[in-house]
Length: 425
Picture 1 (tube, rainbow, N blue to C red):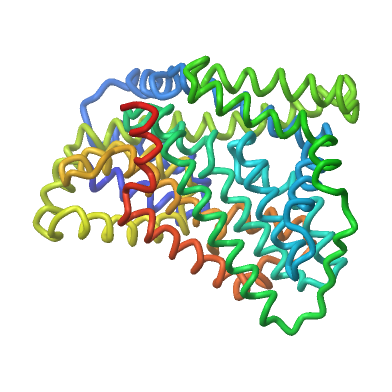
Picture 2: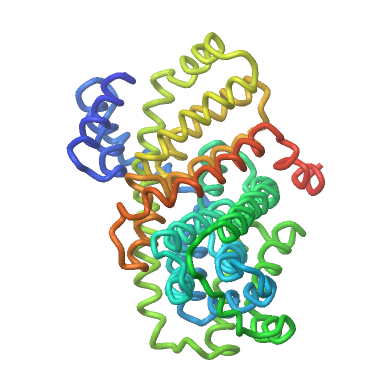
């Protein structure tokens, strides 16, 4: 059953169909032509895949991010990040990374981070002499922190697919997210130190205390959300609703940069984004069901036990595999399809499923910026108004920087598990 399932998927992808459609149709065609399963199972598995309370968090986090973008919260976060960086060479680029880290602590989406922060930062970087392809590469890579630092939509998907605590995943992803952000800031400092580009920083912003006062309500948002989750006040799903109401309060009442007339457009954008994600989950749910029924996880486990020696060899092999997968398959679909297969194998090799989830999400986050289908890459190029092929070369050092951080995260599980063990053990 696994051969026709994968063959149908590859043929449909080669035919130019979207990943979600190809995955769903592969399951339907396999059931129809290569099994005796009743057709009613198709609709049942679609429903089962999305009938999970944890998935309610996705549309609410997307909505919170969209409200932040329209309500002026993003600009205040950037102003505060700028005040922290100071007047060092490369401060504007450092501000971009730091602002993405802060915004990521609320939005949960790399694409939302790209548009919300990039719409402000990319023109500023261009204005002050940074090469446009480099600025777009910086923004695209920094925005992938949106899927690493909690709350993270891919972490929610992994938790649902692999039956792992989403709260533990959120706690475990804090230090890895900070490591990736720190690595990007280190690369920025090195590049600006040796670059011959005639850049100016335009650091005439607000003092730290003034920027903090202007953005206090925006900065308090991650504190409420993450503090509430870690403190056991509410679950990650409930936190998404809190994020929406708090963002609305700040945008409508405190900053007053968003009006009630803006809400229909914000809701419309949220519905479209959430529907796409849910469709991917439903289609991948049927695909995962067929994979599990075929016995593929057991076969993969047996094959890996014969090919690799111990957890280190397993993690190295899986990282290489995920890097290739992330280049061609959308992250959400890859997680829903592969997590049910790989997570049990990781456990069999003695790898903590929470640590493996962090490794998987950080790895697949690179797919947001790697050609040919990097979503963040194309979003950043759209904001910068340049063709995507102009960033293929400047994006490589950024990818290399994240790969170094990924290697450290992979083989030092304490980075992921220290806070998890502190909070949950």
